[in-house]
Image (cartoon, rainbow, N blue to C red; front, top):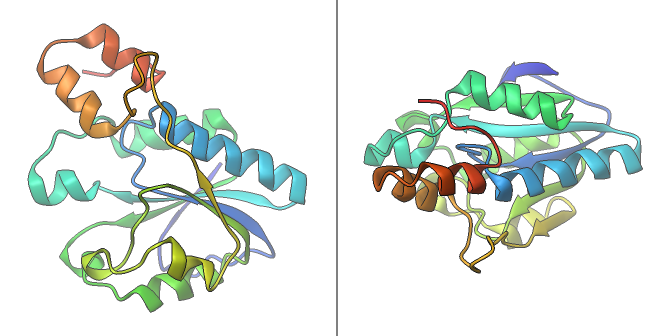
Length: 179
């Protein structure tokens, strides 16, 4: 897998792009990423994970990161992605207008963009799936729930870890948790 910094001019003749913070690369994220890999193979194009580091919740709210950037990239590679684009998330990136993000994605020539149901982007989370659909074909991956019916999320996994429920957090992650 090739790793690229955002805004460094990566262009592709065609791609399927999965977008997200992917903190923990938990089972919900894995569903998004696996779908990107599968669709890219069906379409004969490259698969791309576009991620931000650190995750916004960690950067601005002080939440614990579930995975380091390297762990995240290693998991992307295991899942079979061809490329990872990493955007450094800071105040400047958070202030980006939605059109700047759309321009950056356009250079990847996405045949399809794959996101989770709650996907937002741009300054103040102004961009949403409807806006993304004006520019690209978008596929939304449905929420992944665990056996008890609760949504799998990085926030929930953090809460489990804080309560010392390591086994359950590992189940939701789908990977062993690093300490």
